[in-house]
Image 1 (spheres, chains in turn purple, blue, cyan, yellow):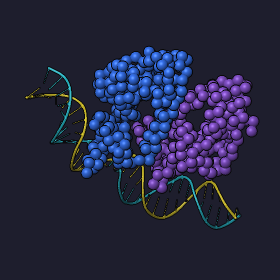
Image 2 (cartoon, rainbow over the protein chains, first blue to last red):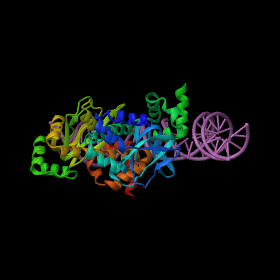
Image 3 (cartoon, chains in turn purple, brown, orange, cyan):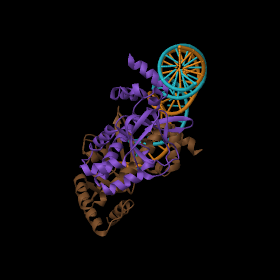
Image 4 (cartoon, rainbow over the protein chains, first blue to last red):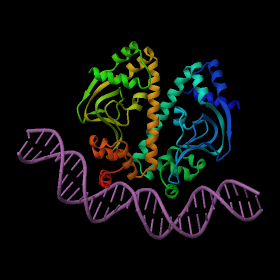
Amino acid sequence: MEEVYTGLRKSIEQYISLNEEEWQQIRTCWKPFHYHKNTVITSVGQVEKYFYYVHEGLIRGFFEKNGTEHNMGFTYNGEYSGVYDSFIFQRPSDWSLETLADSSGVRISYHQLEMLYSKVPILKEWTFRFNRQVMFGLGIFIRSLLADSAEEKFERLMSQSPHIIQIVPQKHLASYLGMTPETFSRMRKKWAQ
Amino acid sequence: MEEVYTGLRKSIEQYISLNEEEWQQIRTCWKPFHYHKNTVITSVGQVEKYFYYVHEGLIRGFFEKNGTEHNMGFTYNGEYSGVYDSFIFQRPSDWSLETLADSSGVRISYHQLEMLYSKVPILKEWTFRFNRQVMFGLGIFIRSLLADSAEEKFERLMSQSPHIIQIVPQKHLASYLGMTPETFSRMRKKWAQ
DNA sequence: GTAAAAACTTGATCTATATCAAGACACCAA
DNA sequence: TTGGTGTCTTGATATAGATCAAGTTTTTAC
């Protein structure tokens, strides 16, 4: 358990630095969670209550349209998860969160976080910077979706995160790149040669 | 000129409220700009110096790949523009900004804005909320790119912003939706019936 | 350990959209 | 006002990737 909090602290301190008192305030607000594989954490229509720090596990964010699921992203060890927009605006979500492996870590509720901002003002700066980073990532994703062919998207994924294919089921990766599992499988074969 | 600043103030006050002194501090930091039609404001490789409030005009954000330009978005009257990621991180831009009509308004430099944050702390909250709104919009855009067919994207655009077709050249709208001008033209014909 | 269910692969075919090409229209510059 | 350049339309053809289908491998559950 201790190492989960150590991970959280390190992760927060990538953006801001904390003194001991601030950290203690923050720490007490994040509560442990644990979900088994293939558990839906948040589903469409719900209001996202929590923001998650995933110490160990794998989570996917996805939505459904005409019977097809579309993956928007994945969370690995040491990253954050949650239905951001629903969390931020406390409005019903239009996408879902599901574990793809047993996942555990700590999470903070919306109200706890709002309260923390007043107790630990610097934390607002953390959210600020974190959001900017997310924005930046979304921009890159959009760029790829607009301009890259299926083959390019596949190759980009393989050269940037080759390990990912061992962790995330192919059908989900395919959907994330906006292609069918069949196409993904063919790309993979081609790539291997 | 006065109405430009009135527009800016209203726009900022959608997120936060300002007293007179705060507003005066903010106001003096935003300087007028004016660009003619078809002017490149910021190009690839440059570091974005300014954040723009466009009172009147039309600006597109785009990048180029293999000789094809891809539009990422447009700015209309009363909206903000700038190469956000380059501005935020003060790193060379990998996309460009160009006017599609004579465009004028006010803009603030990176350093002025940083300075303003310390003089008018509430302004940071404005940026915070504005960024969240941008994130939200990017999420919707990604969703559409992942799941919608060319026809659906076209229809969505026409029902959500039917006026846009009068303002933005079709070839740019086509690129924004991730399709060719020919496809866009055919969709349009079909739609008219 | 074994059966059932998922996930992945591979091939054959189909289709939405791209590409190529050529004509019509529109706007701007002298 | 007119020529020219860029934009839009329309048709013919090409193709990347989807869909359908059937077999194989891997994972899950009892």
